[in-house]
Amino acid sequence: MQKKLTITVDAEVYDGLHSVVGRRRISRFLNDLARPHVVGHDLSAGYAAMAADEAREADASAWSETLVNDVADEPKRDH
Image (tube, one colour):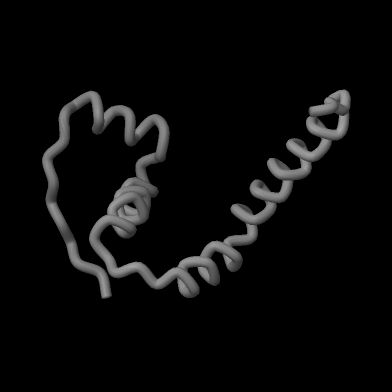
């Protein structure tokens, strides 16, 4: 269930939200930003939601593969 909320922000914040997040995505952005601070923590549900987000998973996979490739090229050090 969704509730409508009217908030007031500085003009710079408003402009930044429009330019970075996009006009039709601000509500979801703010909702996702606030959620971990105000809703109980259910880690298993959170992990399931993250895993279901295919775009996020693809980004995470690409990021981790890049790290592995970066480390693979590093010379081995003896400690």
